[in-house]
Image (tube, rainbow, N blue to C red):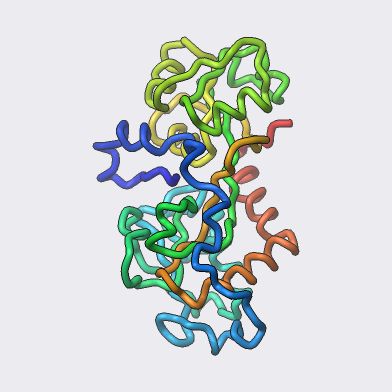
Length: 294
């Protein structure tokens, strides 16, 4: 589930993070993919001039404002920088649109997945695919599978870890009932049982009180904690879970959009040729210096 980062959200951040952090296993998952049941796209149906667009000849893409890093850069989705901006333009190119044929519109996150007409052809905004949301909107196939990130305080032994093996002897923590907790047990396999908290806020407090050496949270949440909540924290690294339902981000469409199968075809091509993986490495690993832990 996407973490909200608007200024307005700051006032309710503790509750928000408690609700969304670390992707509870029951929220999200591939089972909600292709909720529209759209038929497979055909070449003719996906010709640029045949696409069902809000404005003919223009691809209108929504996202929230501010648009945060590393998903966007400089709060400017039009510059093509940041993972989601880059993915959006790659999809647009696959569909036959040049950069100047793409128009961005601002869409508050909390209204993006409500039922009803949309002002965009698709929205990209770290929106997790979930069965509940898919009752009101349609989703593309996933373009990002949220990994797990290890967060520690600078200058501590948690921050010095360079591999999964280095984490085994540390006091690790995560929110109960999350993919993060499962990932600690299944992937890191620490020497001592992880410390379990009811929510991420409690885990963050324990980290700051030196009650644990590091906390594990899904990558979007960890980015936010490090950039906005704990100044002296650092993302030690990231890794993919081996069990539990995988949280995925999808492009969001108005319910019944005829564009979904064509966008899925475009995403499939970008997956097959390695573009999605290259963009993920560029913007979610190299650009933010968060290594993949082995």
